[in-house]
Amino acid sequence: MEPVGGGGGDCRRPCSADPRSTYVLSNLAEVVERVLGFLPAKALLRVASVCRLWRECVRRVLRTQRRVTWISAAGRPGARHLDGHCLVRVLAEELENVQVLPQTALYMADSDSFVSLEECRGHKRARKRTSMEAAFALEKLFPKQCQVLGIVTPGIVVTPMGSGSNQPQEIEFGESGFALLFPQIEGIKIQPFHFVKDPKNLTLERHQLTKVVPGPLLLLASVAFKVAVCDDTVPGPPSQQSSLTEETITGLLDNPDLRVVLVFGYNCHKVGAGNYLQRVLSTFSDTNIIVAGGQVDKLLSLTSEKNPVDIDAIGVVGLSFSGHRIQSATVLLNEEVNDEKTAEAAMQRLKAANIPEQNTIGFMFACVGRGFQHYRDKANVEADTFRKFFPSVPLFGFFGNGEIGCDRIVTGNFILRKCNEVKDDDLFHSYTTIMALIHLGSSK
Image 1 (spheres, rainbow, N blue to C red):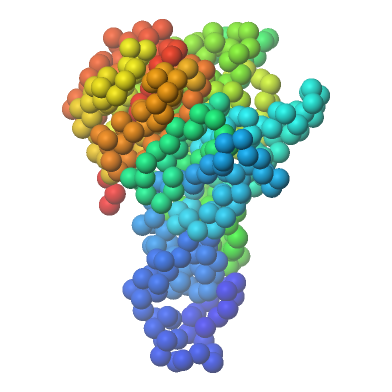
Image 2: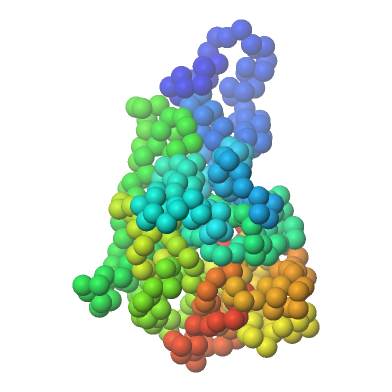
């Protein structure tokens, strides 16, 4: 058998191994696929260079690994680690073991420890350098062609790794974070978007939301994790390397397949930031889609853009989810929801949407004024209530400075509240929580 990186030739080569095992691993694709199915994605990319048979087996195995994966981390309250943020450390270890190739990654981390403002000592340039250090380290861990979107917020809502049925945690203080890894999913497009306020041009043109965005050219390499694999392509020898043709992705308007928009306004404490966020949302909020999100502290990562992130700018960033297989719903927990009973009543409305729980992600966007203080010193009330009604759906989100969303359901046959009944102002809230479900289609 040819060694790894041998150029993808015929597997049937003389070697010193047991001839029977050599024959099986060189000729029986069913056996090879069964064995390769236990390997993480990074290892699969390496062994794809062994020979043509293995390359085809790797391609088929990767096709079956299309479920959303997450990596989460939490440190002890008040603890500081000399090796950086806990999310960066855990990602560096766990990305070696994930069985999906992430095409899009959404990470969120707590502002206090991820940005490390206490190290700046009042010097503006030093603050910028320190703030981006963890973000740069984290971006380098992902595949080169993976679109990474990263934000920091005052608090984090996270489900521990291992199972979607693990108890979600509302971490209002302390080091914490998570990364959602979205592979390529058949029939679904997940696309980052970004709008930056330009003081010289305050007009938001329609073409900015309808323009066609060229997709990245996904080049394949023979080994290493910093590659992208899509559908019928896997790493191969240089003579057989191929690239995907550029595809186009429609924007936030005039897109009949658009179903969900997660939207985050950043640096909203600055003058004019709130008005800019409302102006962006007003352009597409009246369409028949789910809109959910909130106001966060800062945008730190957006690798889909060539220019580096300006952490002092005012802007709006997010992810759009397009595809007819998507189902979604959101509910608003207003200020009157202040105990377990009223929280359960609100969650019952979300349950009534009948969103399938398999291959579904939950999001929770809450005000920093809620949490344990809002529920009379009782912690984790809303996350626990969510788990009671959705026992197998992982929950993620943050505590921020303003919430975006309303009661809205988009499925094939049921709409709880029509979008044209919701005014722009009804999407913006304070001292509330938005709960959302996004179903990414049934697994085949």
